[in-house]
Length: 66
Image (tube, rainbow, N blue to C red):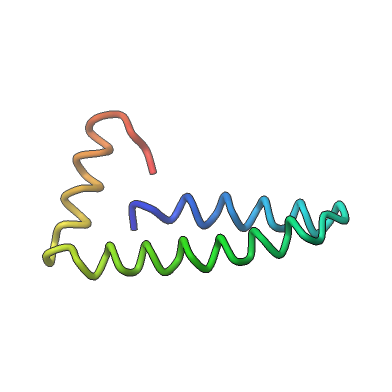
């Protein structure tokens, strides 16, 4: 999926926060990760079949790696 990178970033930030004792930040990032996951799922369900592959291919051709 073309938006998977954002969940990877949020997961890394949450792990950093947990490892460094930023407990409130880690909890906030957990909530943010849940929102991002829901938004991505909603966006993916709204796409016509095959659109994800087309959008990913177009982004790669434009130099926007995912």
